[in-house]
Every structure is written in C-alpha cells, then in structure tokens.
Length: 177
Image (tube, rainbow, N blue to C red; front, side):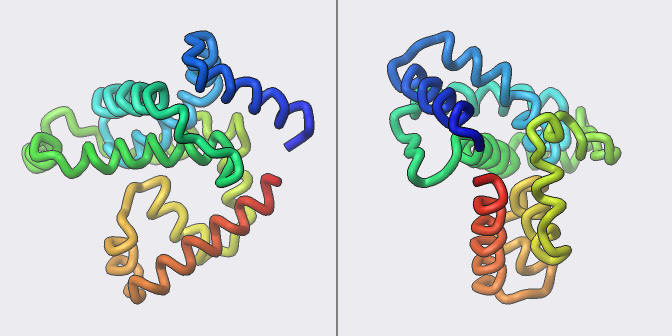
C-alpha cells in the first residue's frame, strides 16, 4: 500500500472512530461490493446477503473503536466482521429452515465469485497462493466454512487447518504490504 493510500486510510479510520457519518459512507461506497460478494458466497441468498451486509455495517459503525491498524488492514477487519455476520446468519434457525424448504434460496451459479472483489484486487491476491492454501482460504473466508468444517471436508486434522489458515493469511499480509 502506498504511503498516500495508507495515510488516507488512517484519516478515514480516525474519522470513523470520531463517528463521522461521511467516513462510514465512504467505507460503504468503497468496500460494500466486495463485502456483499463474500457474504453472498456464504448465505447463497441475495436478500439475506443484503440484510447481513446492513448488519455488518451497523457492527462496523458501533465497533469502530475496536479497529487496530497494528493488527491488520482496514479491509481485513471489515471482511472479518462481514464474514462473521454471514456465518452467524447461517447458524440461525430461520436460515436452516429456509435452506431445508428451498424458499428464496439462490444457489451459487459461479457468477458471485467475481462480484467486485476484483476492484480491490482480492481475487488476484488470493490467486498468488499455493493451490492448497487457496482452497483453504476459499472455504474459510469465501464460503463460510468453520475451521472444523474445513478440516472435515478436506480430511485434515483441525490443528493442521488452523495452522494452514494462519500461514496463508501471513502470506497474504506480506503480499499486500
């Protein structure tokens, strides 16, 4: 990230922490398409993804003071909140019933994979990982699998999955720095 972009992000975060409504509007404009794409891959319903995105931005607004730049980029923090909101949504009774009955359930047709995550280079960055790491990041961060579900799906020990996720995230951090 260039010094100018880093400085702009710092100003934006400071404004957000000061409850500047323009800051949340800028963050929404810049990041909502990518966050929506991530959420949609997890919840598989456009209506649910819109609701979860709104919930995520409410959490971002309410918890802005918890963002710590020393722990990662703003986008990483936003993705974490959005992903967690989406996973929480999939664990609700209403969601599980909706999936079982098939009502308003939109299956991933492969098009959501490119929903504006490319405008920030996310897909391009993830593509730089080794195939095994890409698969784990895709399952955990884009498809919403828990570490345990990923371990089961890939027939790997849970500890191995957690270690591989941490290692892949470290590589991604180095790529974007």
